[in-house]
Image (cartoon, rainbow, N blue to C red; front, side):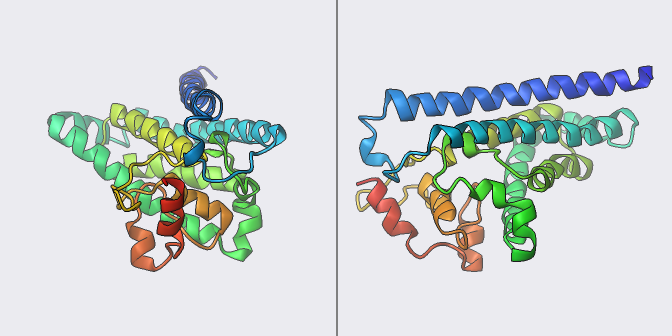
Length: 253
């Protein structure tokens, strides 16, 4: 049984790190926006309604469960690496610092595509109740909604990193930075306050990035805005909510 000890140790360390990231950002964003800065940022609040405390607690518990699933599926990468079947981290290390940052950018772009298409898939009525209903019970999202997933959705999201690490030479620190970026964007994207900069005429200053309003509209009207980090898939596939720019302008007035 001693061969299981490295796996148990890796799982515990990964789970602790990922839960710590989630707690720091979810609690930090909630405390900063919903408590400390609630008055000065009142004009940037997307919805007047505030989720009840019970919803926040449920989201927190479901997010912790999802993170444990992430760490469990992440053992695939750990096992393949230690079995010598995943040489990518060694290859990436020899490619130098330019590839380090390039691989991070590519990983984020690839994950956005993975998320868009798997997200659309689990919105199919035959899959929705099993895979995605939990997340949409948060009709009015909060920072704690970030990883509030059903078990199946958590597994789908968790599979991306092992698949990427197996196919594309990527250093382990890059994967860590990717996970940090993911939790930051997810937490901010569900924060309920429009935090992204706008032009003078009330349009997104960075139109290729999904804003808080962009994802908030998905929770309000589920048939639109499937993208996670970028808007280009929604624009190319005609799934961007036609009210998006109007609602964004209202949120940054």
